[in-house]
Length: 406
Image (cartoon, rainbow, N blue to C red):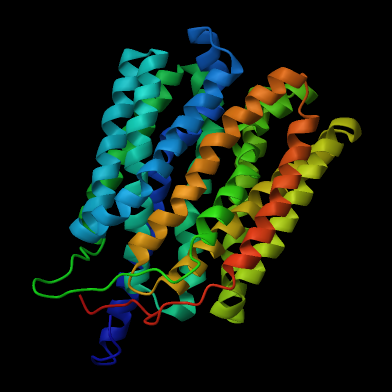
């Protein structure tokens, strides 16, 4: 968008911005369905297919690992085909492989679905970041990208609340198919709402990343590696350490996710007020809080479920706030190379998501307790904050306001 036009055009432009952010928010949540759902219906899948814990962790790890492996290529694809088509392709893939996994109902089909949907999800990340960056000014960037990223915890909240109950009342296949068909419907909305974003013929756009940008994928790897099990393993943690029912544990994680969305938005407003120069400092602080939440999860085993719930709520909420602010910091420094910068950053991010869930599950199996796994995650979060210190020294590429008139 440009600042030209008449005063009467302003409400229409504002409505367009709100609509793009809203649809991108739903799209990024729908694209993540197959990455998170296994953690919430894992007990039903294990009982049905005779699996161990690490099998469920592997589904989550494979999905997000493939997202990481595909992220750099996804950046290039988004630059070529545009934000709109990138997101639509992802949601079409989610619908297709999700329904197939539900119909066939085998572990190997779940692995195939995790692989395909994982690679596709890389397109949703780059596409939605580019779409939001194209219509939102730098003064509203963090809150817009935080709202957009909030689609993920909103979806995980719905999955955590409905998944265990639906898997018990119907089957894990039924809830998987229903959510993935919904993802396909979201893809239709994306086709009509999101900006195309393909460069006009004859126009060359120079997309280069600033020197030292490699600290962002390193820091994002550590951030997600140290915090992702709060999502994937909180339900089993509550079930096994405190004899909580699957439904109650799912509701606790759902509550944490919805609280996290509110924290993300409030943090986004605050981060926009302090400006681009101090956004990294906000991320570093949030990493410290998540590390403290991991320690509380350790202490909760001895103290009681109340402290464990505090740990889960704080860990999930402030992790989400850190991720939303991190996206804004990436866009701040990327200039016109938003898709490329997102792809590079999310490579590290999702490789962390590949390593963490399966390693956490295997470590719980090995030690017979959640104590040491949570403690090690606290240490990882210290390293994450340190890496973001170095990322904060990266000088931004000029041309930070990416809005266009198209």
